[in-house]
Amino acid sequence: MKTIAAELAYFLRGRARQNLKVLMLYCAFLVAMVLVYAVLFRSLMWNLEGREFSLIAGIYWAITVMTTLGFGDITFHSDLGYIFAAVVTVSGVIFLLIILPFGLISLFLAPWIEHRLRNRLVTELPRETTGHVVIFGVDAVIRAFISKLQARGIPFVLVTSDHDEALRLADEGLRVICGSPTTASVLSAIRVSAARYVVANLSDPENAAICLAVRSQCQTPIAVFVDEPEHSGMMHQAGANKIIALHKILGRYLAIRSTTCGALAHVLDSFGDLLIAEIPVHGTPFSGKTLENAAIRQRTGLAVIGIWERGCFTVPTRDTQLNDKALLVLAGSRVQLENLEQLIGEHAEDDLVFILGHGRIGCAAARFLERKPVPFILVDRAENPLCSEHIPIYGDATIRHVLEDAGIDQARGLIVTTNDDSTNIFLTLASRQLLPHIRLVARANCEETVEQLYRAGADFVVSNASVGAGILLNILEAKASAFLTEGVSVFRRPLPESLVGQTIVDSRLRPRTGCSIVALEPIDGDILVSPPPDSRLENGITLILIGTPAQEELFDTAISGH
Ligand code: AMP
Ligand code: ZN
Image 1 (tube, rainbow, N blue to C red):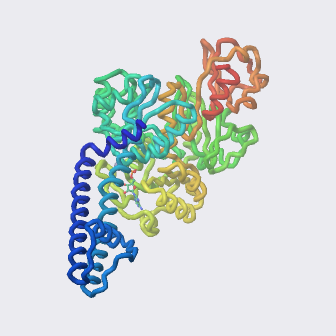
Image 2: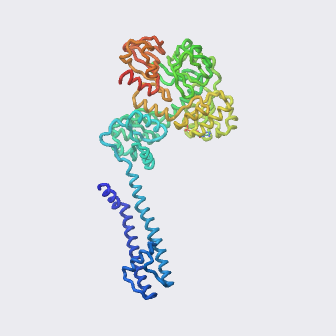
Image 3: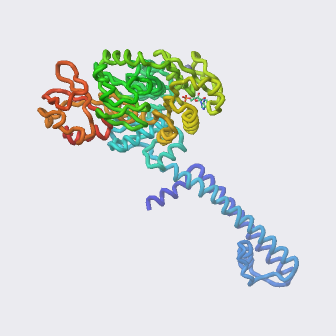
């Protein structure tokens, strides 16, 4: 009853009320029309055919003819009468059967349906909402992030000022609030002061405005994506706690994986003195050998804690073959990486890297290679307004002669980084066919393209979405873990009581959780990287482990008992 009353009330407000007036006028016009026809009918019947009918009979006749019911019980028998009846029928069809329903639909039904659709959006979160993540701006990165949040059962709310986008998101079953992100009423509607984190993923000026608006209300931590790394200081000033220069990070990841030069430049993250680095096998003296024969540990002191091969991460054994296409994940100290640098430096080929796409990410990759230094050639079909330092070769990279004329056959490494995934797939396919042995690193703008790029021949794919989402999740969970891009991380845990006194083999950590021990960190003393399987786990030490988020969770539930 209440809902019917609410729906009826809609027709008495604003535009609907105006439209109701128009409808009333139109109905009055129709009534007048029927009356005029009824009077004319009586007079024509009397004058032409000498028959007399009452006014009620006239009204009855006009309505049955206008609605095309035409029972045929009262009919004219003269030519003028037929003409009059035809005029009444045609005007009835036009005014009663066409204009009236059309008016009803456009003035009432359509606005009412739109009103109902608009009202699907919630206008504020329930008062008791706490610990949620507030997200401004939805793109592929945020989509990957929210699927991680859903998997963990962490509540979140999306905020957009675009009404159509809000409706689309609501249709997907996501919680969304429509409104300007910087207005106080919207911020209190999303309970920003009770939120766990705010993620600002709009343009740099909009993100700065969000930081200031949130800070004027509360101290909820804010993570911000910046397009230009130079804006970081300004974002800090505006109140951001974490600043993510995603394009720079992605450019760095692409560059790291495209060249073997300078092992220290391949460092991804660190745990105090323990550095985690990634280096392609291609172009190193280890190529084609087993891990045992490569003797990386004996020659440099570094431990190989993982191997990436075409998007698959594995923990190697002594017999693992080090293929040209593989990427080694190494752990060790700065000095040990310097040892590796000397070792591969002796073998280093003259690296030349081609970067296809000089946008924000391609430019960041170029800047990274510049510092190593590794020579590179940029190709783009358009000018990059944000960069005045690099001079690319202008042309569409999908046209074969553009790359051939630029001398791509001289390249050792290739970074495919345009903003269009189908172009990236095409460039990967074409380059792999032209240069079967080139080190080919490609960027996936959408998560779904990762697999296709590997199939097209990429040695390594860096996915914007999974890198961005992984970084956000690390920030959110305040993990002291090193994020090794595509879903693998190195993390630290105090030794669980259940494992005290056991050896690494006895602990059966790997078969039980899939995690591997990278290093042991005693309370005092040096970190022991890649400890032998018979090392005893002494009370008080800290484990440094490597694994996927699922394996990490398994460790926490099955071993630590959290
Ligand atoms: P960003 O997303 O900022 O890294 O920019 C991607 C860059 O790729 C832009 O500068 C585009 O001009 C460039 N790009 C896109 N398609 C092609 C293509 N077919 N050939 C060369 N460059 C391209
Ligand atoms: Zn540049």
